[in-house]
Image 1: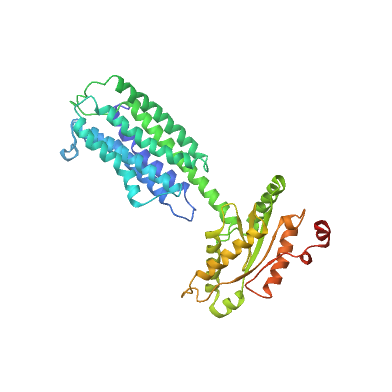
Image 2: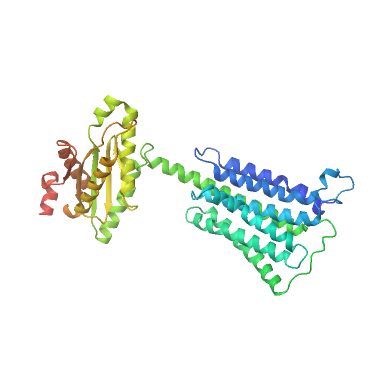
Length: 408
């Protein structure tokens, strides 16, 4: 066989599916989270390898081929090959959904994976000996790629690698869309299927380039996800999911600058769990951790997306509410107290959680910077802790002398 023989080229290109899988595996080493996105992309690449192998199962390609390998007629080869291609595209689409962390139910994943392939194969059996078989094939390729574009566009907001994937997808849509419209204007002749059906040399080269470049773009997205994940870990408290003190500083600086620029108030609350030392001493640190997580979960269920939630240290937290007055923030703290009261004691948390908090807004501390507000709120918290289960607003006595004069 010659190097430009399509059958030989198929044999040469098939291992690149496995090479691509190796690239992906190496790209994901070290990420301590779910690898479902990677697994689904690998499934898609392995199915693509099968897509390249299927034409070799036709009789008459080789002089000495075992009969058990010659199992597909040209018609069956065409239908099964395109059906497998659509499954590969579907597997890659499911992988992108996992990367975007918006997967949906198992039923939805199954539909993305199998529905285009099944509908195509059912229609192809009917249309195989008509001029409509090629437009039917192109239509379902366009549908499958369009479904993939939708999720890739969402990924492009976070990952630069998605733009490479989008460029390739739009190129494929343009190419197949042009051919589809051309065939609708003038239907092609009926395919003869009187000899083994093989892709052209150019089609094989394009297929290899597109699949390999797509996989490299996906590998780049995995690397970006790893970097963002590690960055998030460095600024997040692993126990509660709140920002840690280090991660909060840059966020608070930004919020203060925006408030000064647009002249709106910021409310700051500093809640602290009551009797936390007693909880640890009586029930153990595991229950203490559960108390912190339960409190954080209650906050997360009530706060707005724009609100900043920080574990300031130990059992002490900071909540920053942009565009919020102290009265509105006090209402939030009341809702938080009600949410904690509504939680029934359980084996994991056999007591009622309560907190004390200091509270202020920048409108009540004229011209104050972030550090001065936090210090004043901390003093208000200290006063609230004398009574427990109480929220204390900042008073003039909590302010530095210069701030009291400025407020007056």
